[in-house]
Image (cartoon, rainbow, N blue to C red; front, side):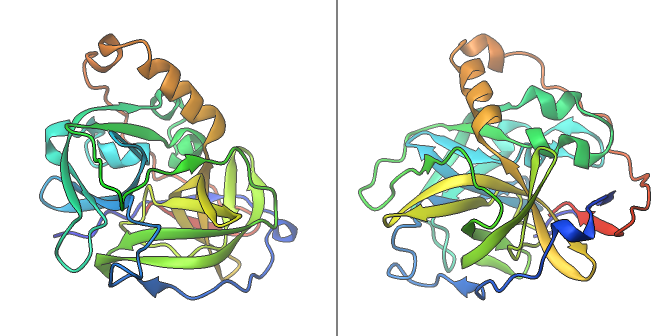
Length: 272
């Protein structure tokens, strides 16, 4: 299986906005005990050759990145029938396997500028499962509205070198806000798109962002995250309008521009 596409763009981030971070190392979740509390994260298999990461926010609803639902070579939407959610995929087995009944991508992702970076603020999609997942060990996550600069967060993701079991980074940080995006110190790679970024309060994990891109800023590895409060509220409002929203012809995204302008910091962003 191909481990995901890499897309190179540039973004200007002032050096003073991004500081070194002492985050924790990735830890592979190999057993049920390792994954306790994280079973609602799963791998999204897309067609025969790619995957992303997703997380349950309701028994029948998966949250992921919008760009996971597009073929970025052609700009066309991927058919929902080609996507499968594997909840708590570990060691070749999942706690639950579900198809996608229908998906809804934030319209701002389609309408924003030609560069991928212009769309990061709207890089959110919700996927309705063909059947709800109702298992006591799999609890959907709530949403946290905001994370300020310096907030300790964590991330669980699959990636090209950890495709068969998820990895948890318990501590990374929000380094800066850049426009409508979060610059994070979290360790991500191809396949991590859509991975949930968490804050933990009183032992309860809530999703505050999704992984949209990876980058290096002045030699420091960072991730670019999509804040969720406004775009997710907008998506849920669209969903409440009923089937008509989903039955519109699948939109085509113009092929994302690979033209880039060199910034003062030379921040290179790659779509995971």
